[in-house]
Image (cartoon, rainbow, N blue to C red):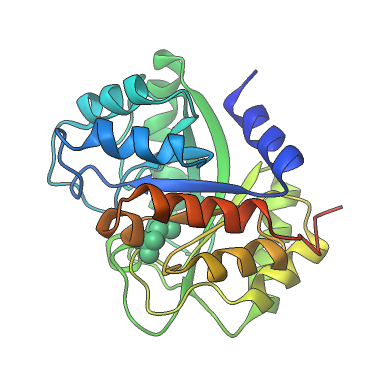
Length: 254
Ligand code: 1GP
């Protein structure tokens, strides 16, 4: 089964999935096994690994430790071209569709594609949309693009529909790591009602209740990074996992 199929299976069986983001700069290699094992035992559904800017040059080694510590899907969420590795189960092949920077629409993808092909790693094409909260996030600054304003669900929907028609396989709505406000439920609902692509939502989600609302609005997967880096206890992961898995998705895509 491919990683993409595993994601779809998680959504079908659990109603929604809970993914934990690991930024190699923010978690020590020595603490990684315990972090990953704790999250796995607590019921999370998979891991994303990456960051907008990495000072750490042991990306492969981090991935190896993560893979040795869990049987769950481990996917690269690349912040740059340097974040490509054969060790992961898959890479989210991101197209920054909310922006108009050609390097992030096709330039970097052309550079990365032959390397990914040679590594034999599964690439999951993902329409990546930055959703603005007014405050500049690392992703916005580093990508040199403008995010979609978070009070414009119609603009977000038009981008989502374009991604679907182009043939991308996932959508990722990201308010940016540590954002003051997460992606509004109204925007998620507007997209989920009309677009059949599985929707990942992350950035600024701090409580299990907020996570539940994202799934109930129509997200297929939600992501925490900052809150679980700061509080990596079994109970934290479990509370988020339970909230996601017990949510009642009202607007599951057709
Ligand atoms: C950022 O969606 C992720 O790309 C996670 O964001 O760190 O705010 O949880 P947080």
